[in-house]
Image (tube, rainbow, N blue to C red):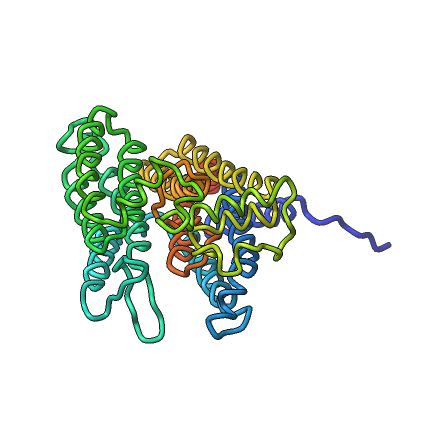
Length: 407
């Protein structure tokens, strides 16, 4: 009589083992779905999508007045977002060792691009010479210098990890190279970007473990240097004066136009806002409504609740990056993530502080949300680099790889 036999247990165990090995390999290559990675990716993409919605709302009128359609600027920003997301995903899947290998190339390329700003390829906008025109496209090299600084400073701090407590070991060559990069941007009169780059550089050294008193003297030197830099520009003097003295209706035409209209837009929003797309300030009243002052449009259209949501998202971004820093085993991961956090969250604080009137006008965009292709692509790219390092530095993946003989 014929009988049926159950599959051999060894065969089932072998198939299950192969399945686990395949899963571990996929996770190692494409990124482990850790809480940190999920939160960072989700928060970043949510901010980018929210930014597209707000760019459409805030730029539609100016886009039409400039001779295009209501969707011209939105379409450009959507294309930049698509490029940035693709670069973020590609960067997240590269081996972590890639960033140390290309660090010198990245910083040198960034410096060369910034030098080209002062050639016929470069041009100015809003008083700042910080742009390159390449055919029909334009770019802001300083945004990509920020990315290069994050990676290069992390590489230097990794190589000098054992000697980081020496003042000269910490600052050579970090100080001269970072100073050159920042100085080239300052030559183009973009003080807002200079402030963010300086914060990024000090943040990188802080998270690398440099002693705080080794950061204090250079920080004081930078602060003293800022005084003649501000005084050298009548525009900067007007901004600082308006900030110190306060803006009133009497100052409407004397340097306070943007600040006052930003404040009025925020106050008009109330608790729930006037409704998405219903801003009055964007009708050619508020300069840079889709860029530096987009937070004012958010407050007007979505109210206090919408503004608080944006603040909560950046707080979540900071918390997630701090978790990655705290859990990191590699110096490279700590420094890149810490520097990127200081850049993105610090720039958000500066942008929102300017709109709220608690900081003088500096002219920096709100990361992921303001219009502008260079800043959006650079921000998404640095998040991809952090995801790449977090994936390899994730203890769970290392344990699984070790268990299957792949560590």
